[in-house]
Length: 347
Image 1 (cartoon, rainbow, N blue to C red):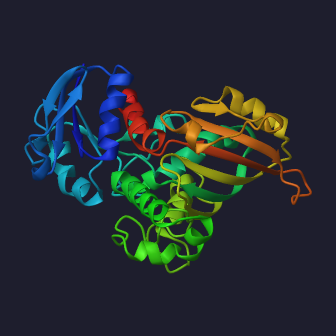
Image 2: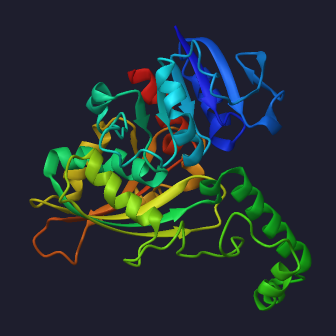
Image 3: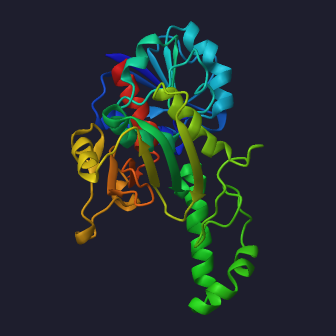
């Protein structure tokens, strides 16, 4: 039995961490829920009992074995020493330590062995990297991936509860203000200008898509896109892996989707890919286009597995080494809370 703490317990990912611990029957001896001072005293349910949220302080980790963090990079950096000096292991969901050479970056279906060399902190990768690698890692082990071109279609949940609320509020405002479809299209920005300005996103999210997630870097890519590059190389132990990504925000409520173009070391057929993925842990094969069966974020929502489908030969690659596929996964679960709890299970 383990004494567990959750830092950021009242946030969207923190709430899912609580649910996941209960759903997976994690051996919890005691559960401490931690958040900012303004959330202290709020009561949250775990296994039929109510637990009062406590203010996160330096002394919060006395007697704790595993501390699940989802309170932002700054908070993780601030409390790292307090966690490790108390004897607990921090499983961190932020970007604070992902590329630190002294911190393992782990997806249990991808590189569980890396947990063994932790020094008190284990990092949870970015949500889109997790969703991609659950499907790509078994293919890499089987055939050797040498290049990945990814386009991600990321839901409002990527910005947490405030992102989902912004999508809903903007959608309501547009639907209530527009008499018909033509008016909605013509006066889209005028209506939104009369609502609260976007807080979670750089652009309007309702009925819109935009290729901007996180801040732009000097090379023209966003920080979100570079996470896919650098985290994939680290977890696959393949520093020369070629990865290019375009990250797009879309107006779905929850769960992310990704279009993947994979180039292998040798010729690979769609049948070979399906055979590997059908046996891969954490993957559900949804690949019957004739029956309109393919991965959808609405089907991935609420589940810990990654859906994979639309598997086909890349016809632009004449040597048969290219495969196109589509994946979908719940950003709050496999992309965050569920993966963190799986790491705790490895511990």
